Image 1 (cartoon, rainbow, N blue to C red):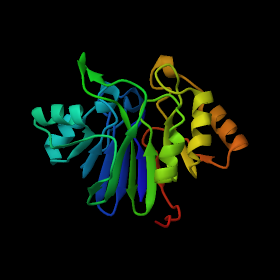
Image 2 (cartoon, rainbow, N blue to C red):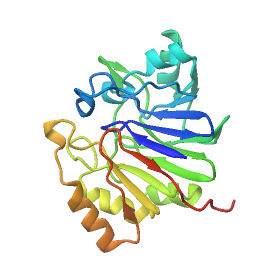
Image 3 (cartoon, helix red, strand yellow):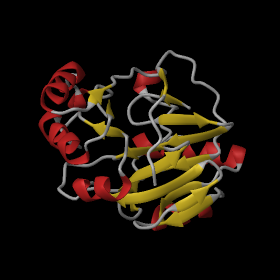
Image 4 (cartoon, helix red, strand yellow):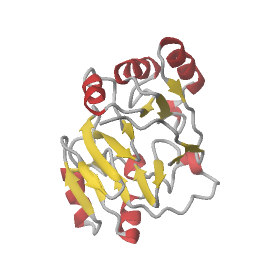
Length: 232
């Protein structure tokens, strides 16, 4: 199983011939400027909300590859009207896919595109190959992250740390304490001037105060995920 970080909040999970994309902001992503964008053939696209830096290339990729997009109801219906394959959903149960499952969970943010309201934002928990991941989307810290962790037991968390629009370092540290993943990958920082921050300081704080390891990934870095599968 391989995770490839695509800059900002975008990532690809490759497992047994499947590719799961989360928030595929590729074209126009400053983290990828001047670099060859890898060709992607997604099996499924997971969206946390409709802001342009997360919606990104979803429409193009879904249409090109007939890849279903799992998103909150309003966003999913909006994508269907634009010719995409979508699975409009909401917070709650698992959505089964050929590679595993996904579940939408709360986030505190907003969700719109070019002034059009497109439902609630969310985070997404997803499992493949016995490993459970939690992509928090754009959010502040909130106490129910502990409940998300209790119900889903994520081993890897992708958490925003850039502040201004999302959690900053202090809030992200608290989020790690609530979620207690084995590994946390910081996202949503340094892409734009308002979200410049020090990922190494985040690493120092997390590893000094918790048992979680921090994996800092630059755009296009890959990670061969080798974590023990958890028992049901």
